[in-house]
Image 1 (tube, helix red, strand yellow):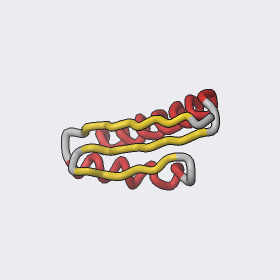
Image 2 (tube, helix red, strand yellow):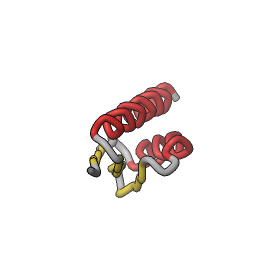
Image 3 (cartoon, helix red, strand yellow):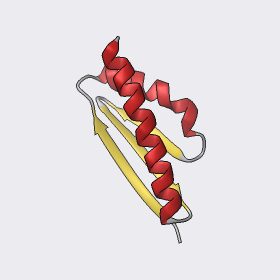
Image 4 (cartoon, helix red, strand yellow):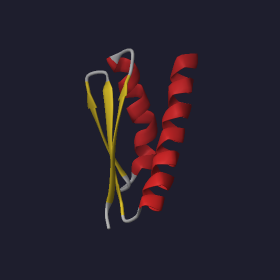
Length: 74
């Protein structure tokens, strides 16, 4: 079985979306494919099981949250 999830995060500005993407790209490896379309960060996640997908999604969203908060502080 294959589990797939697409996440779209819409930021206030294209600059913030770009900075967050740059901050999290190093952690994506082969688990998450990210693209940027104007202010929107698109993430595509594929896993072999639902539990693995949920684990990857949890890690991804935690990284995005940290990056988002760091950008807001600067």
